[in-house]
Image (tube, rainbow, N blue to C red; front, side):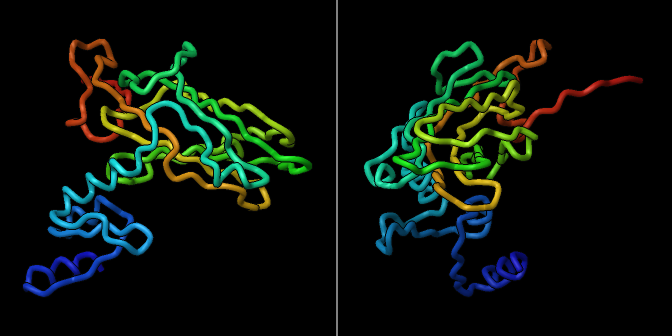
Length: 217
């Protein structure tokens, strides 16, 4: 399908392509339009409009506070922040190091979540989902939530190469009852570092992730 669209575009015909996949959009289109609630807020070169979209999605560096609209819900994420493995709040992490996502879930009144299923989503600068980390898939059964509950999701090592990333959340239970989805709550950057102590920096030129390797002859 995408190949056919490229072929039609090369023939000089106009193709209207609607997508949230920013990587595909940038490769297929030379012009783009950004809509927000049905209103045009940006139009022009695809790369420039995608950059505008990224800037509009970044809400904070290392801290999220629930907006007033979310606080009207019976269950919501009240606050979240990014910390390094030493417990310091950060928005930059050297390549090869880990992080902690610490967040508070608020259940108002008699609301509660039985068998919580919490997802932490890492999204790259192109809007692509890099990883979805969830307690159920990790084999961690959480106790029921009532009142306020503070959680920590620790990632001992991020295999991400340098670049800008966002963190979103999915708040549900194992019966797939969805309480809240936040597309972009936090943002952070991975910075170049000599991850393998080889004298060479891991940079964004090497792709999106790094893998430890062993070599022999």
